[in-house]
Image: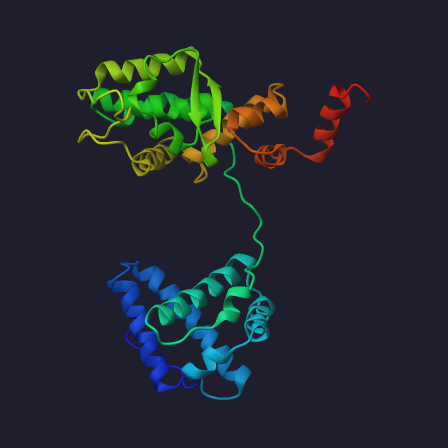
Amino acid sequence: MPEPGIALPGIAPALGRLVEDWLAHLAGVRRLSDHSCAAYRHDIAVFLRFMSGHLGGAVACADLERLRLADFRSFLAERRRAGLSPRSVARALSAVRAFYRYLAQNDILENAALAAVRSPKLARTLARPLSPERAKAVTREIETLSAEPWVAARDGAVVLLLYGCGLRISEALGLNREVLPLGEALMIRGKGGKDRLVPLLPIVREAVADYVRRCPFTPPPGGPLFLGVRGRRLGARLIQRRLQVLRGALGLPDSATPYALRHSFATHLLSNGGDLRTIQELLGHASLSTTQHYTKVDAARLMDAYDKAHPRA
C-alpha cells in the first residue's frame, strides 16, 4: 500500500487529499504493486513540487485546471535538466497523465492542454540475439524443465516455432488444431491481419507432431493447438517463466526471451546469406525499414545488397 498522504507544503489540502485518494485507487482498485504505487507517488510529488515553485504558491485544483501547454513543457524541460533519461521523463509524464485521467473520470477537473504534450521520443530497443550455439541449447534443454513428457514436448515445440520459424509468441500460441497435420509451410496471420506463408523445418513438424501424440487432451479442430495442464489455451507467461529458469541454468543473459528467439531467427538467417526482403516476408514486417532495424543491419550493408541486386547498379 502507498504511504498515507503526501507531505508537500506547496499543495493545497484539498488537492493533497485527492492525491491520497488516487494512490489508494491505484493500490486498491487497479491492484498495482507497492513498487508501482511508490513510483507514481514520487513522480506526482515531483510534478506538484515543481508547479508550486513555477506558479509561485501552493498548488490547488484550479491551478491544475488552468495549466497551459507551456507549463507542462517547462516541467519536462526541468526533468531533462535534472539529468533524467528520456525514458524516466516519459514515465513522469505518464504519472501526470494518470492523475489527470483519474480527476477527469471522477468529474473533478479536466485540462485539454495535457493531451497536446508530446512524450519524449524513446530509442527503440531490441532483445539481443542469442548465438547459434545458445539458441540450439535453448531448444534442446527446454524439454528438461518438465517431468511430464507431454508438457516437455509442448514446450519444445513452442520454442522451435519461435526460433525455427520466427513466429511471435502470440502467433505460436494462437495456432488452432485446424492447422494439423502440418505440411511444409504454415499460413500465419500476423499483426494487422496480414497473412504470410512460413516454411516449416522437418524438426519443427516432428516436434509439433510429437507433442500432439503425447497430449492427453483432444480439443475440437477449431480449438487451441497448445494447451496448459488444465486443457485451456497455453498462455505466454508460462513460456516466459520457462525461459527465465533456463537462463539461470544455462548462464544466459536476461535478454534471452521468446522475443529474442525470433530476433535470433532473423539474425542467423541474415548472417548466413539470407536477403532482407525474404526475411521481411518471413517475419511479417510491413516495411523493409522495420526489418533493417530489427536485424541491426547498417546502411552500408543495405547499400551493398542494393548494388549487387539492382540491374542499373
